[in-house]
Image (tube, rainbow, N blue to C red):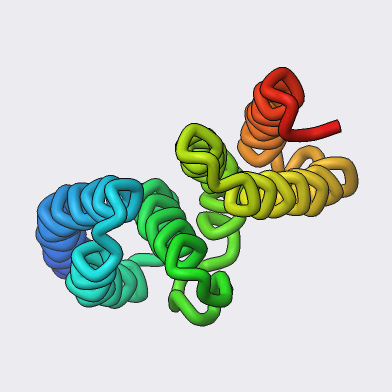
Length: 195
């Protein structure tokens, strides 16, 4: 009488077990990926670009594993957005410091929403870079960073104006980016670097 229900319960148990196992795997991978992203940014700011690149390459494999796991359970994508965002941020910062073309979300192989959020955070890392460059009298580098910061801010802000409900996280990042851009410009003006 209830055999079909019991079979459905057993099928549900298998799905729940698989989801549990995937979630456990994701936790381990997320931890490793975050650590590698943070280390890559730190190495880049120290000028150790080859070390930063190696960390990114190692992280790329982990990110692929994460993306493969969430293919099976797309509803897990939300839980790994921060990891994907930090990876994109690290890759963009390292590319900037290597004076390379900044990678797109397609080049990084990640969804576009975490990528857009990463761009908002890149502004803070570029400010850090620009302040360090100005301290060491590398004004062209500081100005290049400021220009990219302004471009990113303007582009991201245009998205939040049009797609406000869908881009609430991005709106906050734009508010922070605006303050960072204004702060950097103010520092450069006070030091006589910008008119």
